[in-house]
Length: 274
Image 1: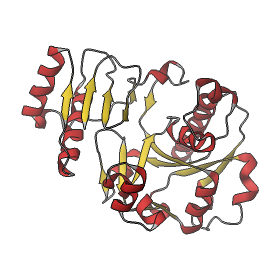
Image 2: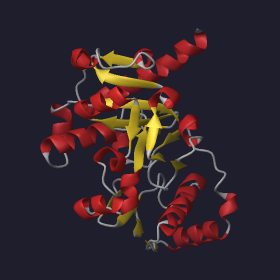
Image 3: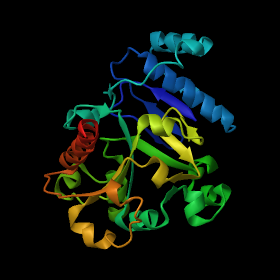
Image 4: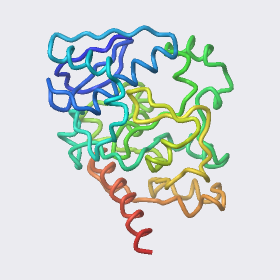
């Protein structure tokens, strides 16, 4: 795996290259250095070599210093907001908010999840080995052993739902015109961080190996209101008070994402008042 550090438009992993974007290029925060350390540790744990490509010598020096003294960075607390993604220019919140983590999925997959009461890794869902899935889809085997999380106000889950619907990555125009969101499962960050199968690979905000039992960890589940009839009779009694239906009267995927996240925050306020 190669880590390419430059003033990229947005972060992401494509074709075995991690395009690492800084919030204030060429300056690195302690949080960004922590994520790089965790990324290298995770890749090493899974038998993969990693190298850094960067033309800025000051950045390389800062990273080398961090790698030589990881204890100075690994205790860094997450910031309340992360601004390294260029989508934040469009995002209503102007950054990734970090109180909650989210796993987004399609309507049909969400039905299966709520019926069984668990979020499952791809290995568990498809009942195949990680090696078989890696051969079929091209990603490293360990990728299929985990349930991936994004930040709570990120469009990643709905973007993936749209990508699978279209058979390709949606354009910005399609994000505006075609807003057909899936279902979002929300979790408190600290709750997931304390899960026995928690992992931080330095790329995803968090991921959990094998499964998450919803009754133990779910903060809330958000379903588009027009899908309500599809779900009412399949949700177990121990989850029904954590499932909410929200009307999609939004102009685009960013507007929908902000509306949902603001609703999730309002649940916390209601709980504290109650």
